[in-house]
Amino acid sequence: QVQLVESGGGLVQAGGSLRLSCAVSTMRLSIDSMGWYRQALGEQRELVADITSGGMTRYEDSVKGRFTISRDNAKNTVYLQMNSLKPEDTAVYYCNGLAGSRNYWGQGTQVTVSS
Image (cartoon, rainbow, N blue to C red; front, side, top):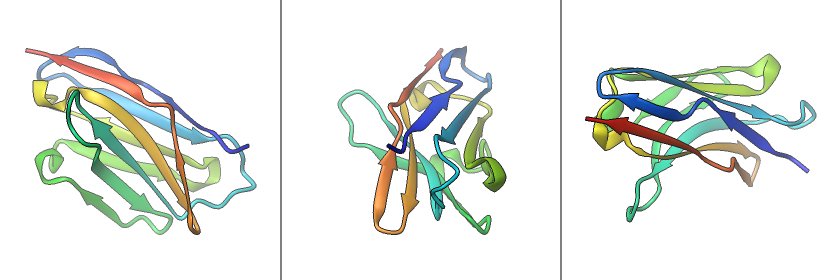
């Protein structure tokens, strides 16, 4: 069974930084696109950033210039460096991996930014 294992969430003050990591549990699966979504309380899940196996990236407008997504294909791992965090970034962050037509999700990690 394929699992996406996330780490790196937590509590940080506004203006601080956090780095999220997400590793795919098997190297036998080739992930085309990996990304991060977030869901704030009472809100819909939204794309934060994603990256293709070739390194093409896209970002949600509110995180451009503050967040950086990267991946290590050899380790089937994706990272999200989050700088200049704001209280409105508070949410559960979910890792996503797309392999062919299959979508895989992590269990979610809480990010809380205090003002």
